[in-house]
Image (cartoon, rainbow, N blue to C red; front, side, top):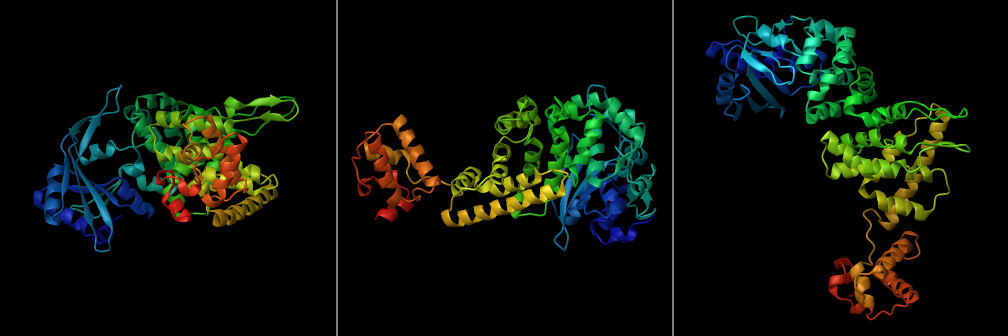
Length: 503
């Protein structure tokens, strides 16, 4: 099979071929780019292997392109970026062909110079071991496929080039990669290869948490992530890298009353999130973290599971406990402890609230509280709640979704009217202290709460003209006397909008 016509459409390949010929070295494009070319998947990362110095070849190509070359001498690699006329940007990495050997306690290889055959032997899977020649004098564009990777692509199979026990023992991260590729491409893992993952699963413990989580995130972002998680579970890897999720598995029955298997329910929710159609720009930016919220929304159910003879199984408070667990799980997984973690934490804590609203008479007060508590993350919360409907009864699912439509319409109308997202009461603690000549105290906190609840209940609008007299009246009930009128308050107690409203 020859790809010369395809390669010549991208000027970078003929250029690399010319520079390699001038240097007297053989060069090949290898790995993921070749795989994706055969799968007709987009790919902007190009790996070049040469029989010689990859750094020297990279510098020659970079000089011709007049672009910066980043050199990593400790790894014998170099990288450059190049732009095409159509605006596409490509990242090209160069490395000399090498062979590797490993120690049992490390996945860091001992590297030596090698041949193309050596380099292909060290690749993780047959579909990643294919190369295409860039040698102008000897078969430019020819596919070099010593392990039948093309056949495995047609069969949709993940298989190691050599003995899978050796492959996975040498670099245990390859076990995660096997499952990640299977999940991303919807491929099967060849039985001998999967059996080796089961045998070698304990070896994952020597891999850094950062690398494991990077692969896990790619599985989470795959088209049907439940497939990858089921493979992780059956391979024995999930229990080692994410035991909290495995703890959800199983159904317990007492007096004929059982509960759903929360492991498979969670995976269904994750798939529902992955296959939703409401793709707003904000949710697209938060896609990974929205999927993490699906994974963790019921994570505390095992810890809160109780049996009640009247109602059966209960999981009271699992949303609050799960929310408290999120920072610890993120810390263990080496995930960022920033706004992404707080987004997941908020959705886990609130995920029952919209569901409860569909089961009762909806009051504006309850809707206001949901708007205030969810803030800018309301769309993500509603997406999670829709995904959380996993009944096998189609009519029941449709009924719940119609109820959600009703709740969302009311939320939208209320938001348009009251502008409650990122709500802050106009009555601040500073304003209360100045009005009644108080120091920070219990009374100040109580009055803040009274005003906040009054605004959310619709008793008083969230503006100073209405809220200040209400504050004075509530203070009087507690035996407090206002020492200043609204016009006498200092500017430090008021926002710029408040100042305008009383001037």
